Amino acid sequence: MRAATVTLSWNHSHENPIPDVFGVDDAVSLESIRYVNPIGDGRYVELLDLRGDLERARTLLEDAPEAIEYDLVGDDNRGVAYVQWHTAGFVGDLLSILDQREIVIDWPITAVETETDRGLELTVVGTDWAIEQAATDLPDGVGLELHRLGSYRPQTARQSATLTERQQAVFELALAEGYYEVPRETTQRDLADKLDCATGTVAEHLQRIESAFASAYAASIHSQNR
Image 1 (tube, helix red, strand yellow):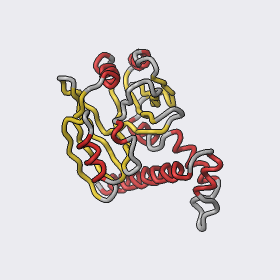
Image 2 (spheres, rainbow, N blue to C red):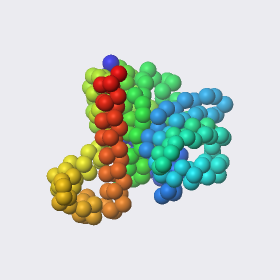
Image 3 (tube, helix red, strand yellow):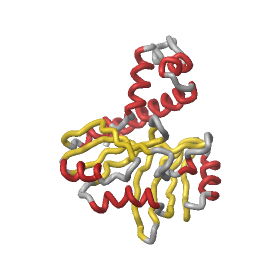
């Protein structure tokens, strides 16, 4: 088996395959897509990892015309949403590639920031030919950045997908600048200046980085205790 980890991006002339209901409100954000399943009749369902104000997430879903029905569970500032959506054209094009090509997705799919907008980082598994054909099937206007291509090793694939490319860059800079030293030798504002981005963006990246490491550590403890 072969595996390719890529980031998909798109310009504003296309419908956003990440539900826009979580892209226009600072109170709640989409972290990852756990699973997507087409169910026919122009519909599909998703399991979404959300961060932020879950009550606000419920309001956004209630008001979203493209959401047919939903359920949301969680506590504090993290939750998982089950959402049934109308399958729009661009989303349908992406889902149809899975039906037409002999590839599978190594879930979850991670929502990331790209140069133009939000994007999706994912790992697909299949033969070299199937992966290449799936890439050529992408609709016009969809950008593809290849991060890794090689033999599929489940444990390695999960570890490499822990951080996105951008998160890796932020983490390496934070580490080099002494952000994790005690006491700290730099601030989020200093890191933002070096990365030429907003302080809030750095703060969000650091939160996701720390969450990813904590989740991986918790999983390793659980595995050792089994």
